[in-house]
Length: 62
Image (cartoon, rainbow, N blue to C red; front, side, top):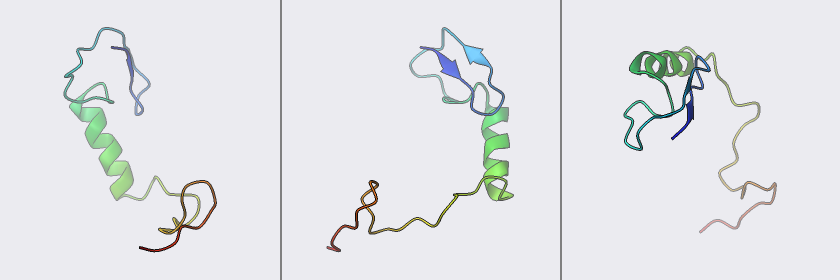
């Protein structure tokens, strides 16, 4: 299985299917990513509408 780490862009060509830090290359990159979320380095570009179906159409509430 090929993995491209979203944090450092390292490519692992022969990762086993049960590779623990997947989709990251290591536990360190996993922690760096979590830290970026917690420090608000990553943000959603617009508010998420819970009633939107993902294609811009509003769903009826249950």
